[in-house]
Image (tube, rainbow, N blue to C red; front, side, top):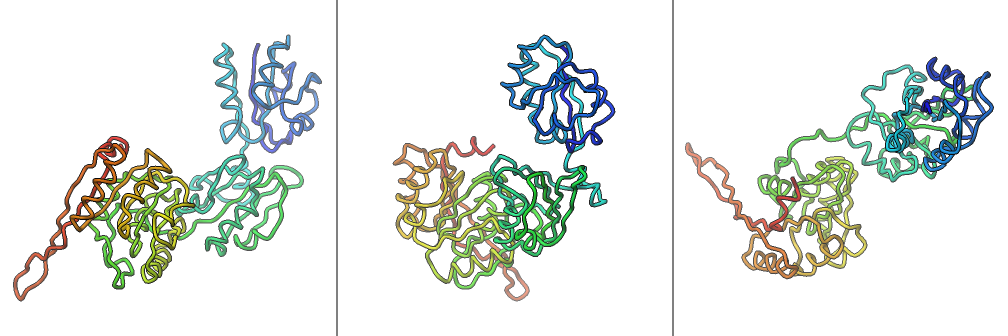
Amino acid sequence: MKITLIGMGSGCPESLTVQGYAALREADLILGARRLLSALPAGCTENRAAAYLPDEILELLHASRCENAALLYSGDTGFYSGASALVERLQAQGYRPVVLPGLSSVQMLSAALGRPWQDWKLVSAHGRACDPVAECMEGKPTFFLTGGSESPATLCAQLAAEGFGKLAAAVGENLGTPEQKVYTGTVGQLAASRFESLSVLLVEAAQVPSRRTQGLPDEAFARGKVPMTKQEVRAAVLAKLGVQPGELLWDVGAGTGSVSVELALAAPRGRVYAVECDPEACALIRQNKEKFAVRNLTLVEGTAPAALENLPAPDAVFIGGTKGNMAAVVEAALARNPAARICISAIALETLSAAVAALTAHGLQAEVCQISVSRAKAAGKLHLLMANNPIFLITRADEAEKSV
């Protein structure tokens, strides 16, 4: 049996490619969603069945005696399409399907706006978890395929709530059909609108801090009199934690939020929870969050471990202060995720001892390193090295393997 998967673009016959049109005319069985079947061009077989799930399609193909089957997909077969999963299933059963691409909603919105799309970031919020704020943190125009519970309006509402309400955006509705409409405005304006189910969203590039290696200058942060993890130590902490772009991270005893900011920049598609109980420190965290525009950073005011109870499970945890609750904080992190990567900083020998004991109590081997930083300071015509307090970093001995 010859099997052809065809991208039908907008679902209108006019958006079919010449190859797709020819394949439909030759088919003696056509399968696809009802909307697509109802829009087939003249001259196609009447032997049709509404089916789009792989199991349904395979069952109909096995029961059929046809020689040439065509399977319809909206948009392009290579852009968040069910075609790829079906191709794998068909190939596993010995078929050699042919795939004919179609016009994607990205191309159609690009054409409607009269601009290229090669620099857009492409995201699907259709039937999958999507954090629009995290997706817009890369400084590129971001295209969202929407559907189900997520519409352009709901995505814009989430962005507006996080301070992106003034960003320009565009919504394409029923693209490629006679009912096509394009709406432009700010994210805040579009959040208050309603759109048809066949809609897509483009959010223009947000101003975000430039990505750079970890270890921002100390002077870049609002500091006050709150202790702050210094530049060289921060760089080492992020190296120890091996942060990935989409991870969920805790910073316990966040102080000024300098580590929290660096974690948020290292995980633009993730989320960072900065836990701090001191009011002055919390104010500084808010200032630094705003200064670096890290919308994926959430301040949690309170004392650990109680303040950790409602936080989602972390992929990695930095512990900079515990108010004497080291064992309970480590217990809370490992209880939520036994595989969580942990890095603890300590100045006092008692804190070092407590950190090692907290890890070994869970059957983990602690790895300890000491960082001593000295900085040159002018003394008349000479320069002398002035030493900062040495810092201990305590991690799980298996973390180097997990972070590679």
